[in-house]
Image 1 (cartoon, rainbow, N blue to C red):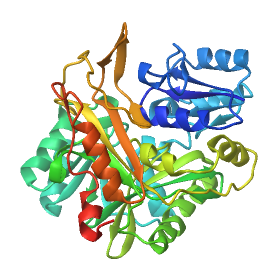
Image 2 (cartoon, rainbow, N blue to C red):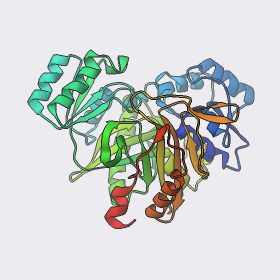
Image 3 (tube, helix red, strand yellow):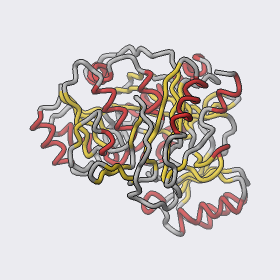
Length: 419
């Protein structure tokens, strides 16, 4: 088989690598991909938004199927266009992807189908939203309603911080159309769990859990990012906790989308807060998490191409997982998630089987930084601590003149119970 992966980040790199490992897959293409991915895929210069160009390429190469990595093309309807062209594609339609594309829609869906989440209100007027914050107090969570690359969320612990976040979204238009409305949510206390599942209609096949680290700096300080590192498994939570989250969150969400005429196919991601009253949804995504994919997929022993095809053909694939732990750390451009310099040389790159590139370009033989999150290094070991120690030993060799990374990824799990 030949297969196409749409996207250019670290998530797409690990998807391409996993597909390339399959004995059934002859060639993986990535559109547009990035120069760091060339160990896993042939990169094709077709942009994510060029649906016609993508469809033409898939037909010309007689691809078996296409996997859509990022959220933006999903919300732009790339799956709808592929299906209209009679092509096999793994990802939700534009209608189903609204579960990620609109926080207010996701909240209303949860309310209708009794999926546990925090209380919330939606506003488009700054004064009304500010009055609600005055009434509710802090801590409170402020979210731009639409897609903001993981950066449109503020967990505010002071009224001043809350009002500043509100101004950024509703008055200063920091997130453009994504901030035409704001969702104000109850702050949930607990520890986070990222839980993803392969979904086709009402069929939900859960993966192993992971934990992401959203804040830019150690000890969960600084602004929210797209994710600075992750690990799997999450020993703080039992298999019963995972089963409960599937039963109370993922299954009713998939069934609810079917009932609403938005049947979901692809990866449904639930960002959960594990509270003393059980799992509560922080957010839904309509695709693999990034960086969660980079620590979950290396644990998947099953053939990813077979899993996808079985699901698309109406089957229920059985997933086999490694008992090993995987921990990954993101190296980002200094200044991220704010402004940062681009096109800086990437020197002294450590060697790793699980080195995944995101924001990079190439000039001659030199890789250059070209985005906020530049790369992720992950390691697999029988224990989380061993994986963590190896990752950080390798990161010590990285030239960090233009890069930074957190030095505490996985510490919550490791120093709690010596996992």
